[in-house]
Image (cartoon, rainbow, N blue to C red; front, side, top):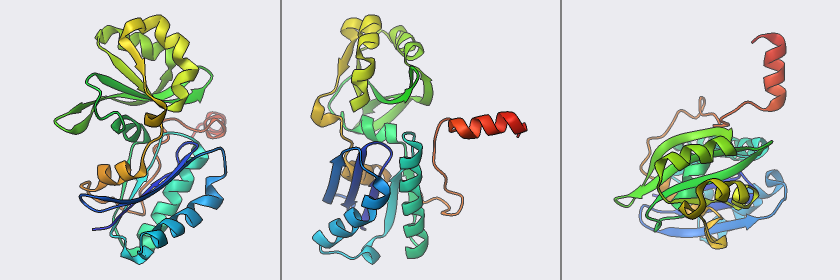
Length: 230
C-alpha cells in the first residue's frame, strides 16, 4: 500500500510517501511562502523522485487542522480532490497530534503548541504509551495563561513542542518552572512520513463530507454569524 501524506497547516509544507512499514520519501520546507502554488509541484516532484505515479497511491492522509485557516483549507482541498479523482480513501489527522508524535522518546506529557494570536493557542495534551501516541486532553483553542494553569495541576513534566513555543516561553516558565521543557529545533518540524504512518490504519472517511478541523470560526465568519443570528 502506498500512502500519500499532505501537511500545509502551518508554515511547514510537508509531502510524504510511505508504505505500511517504510517511509519512501519526504519533501519538507519551513518558510513563509504560499502553499497554494507550491504543494502540487512539490507533490509531483516527490512522486517522480520515488519512481512512482500519482495513480500508484492507495490512500491519502492529510493534516486537517488546526492551524492557519488558509493553510488548512489548501491541504484539505488538495487531499479531497485527489481522493475523489483517484477513488481512494482519505483520512484526517490532527496537526497537533502530528506535532506531538515527533517527541517519541519523551516520557512525560507533550503539549504541541500553535500560536492563535491575542494570547491564545491551539494545543492539546499527548503522551507516548506502548509505542502509540495517546490523547490525554483533547485539542482546543484556549488562552495560553489558562492552559499553563491547567497543566500546573498535573504536577508532571511537560514538553512543549512547535516553533511557536518560544512566543509563550516566558509565561510557561513563570507558571511551570522546572516542570516545563521545550523541544529541540529538529523536533519542531512535523514529518509528513510520520503523518502517513499515523493515518495508515485509520478508516477512510466520506470524501464529500470530509471537512477541516479549525477548532474555532474565522473572525469574519464569527462576526457574520453574530450579525445574522445564524
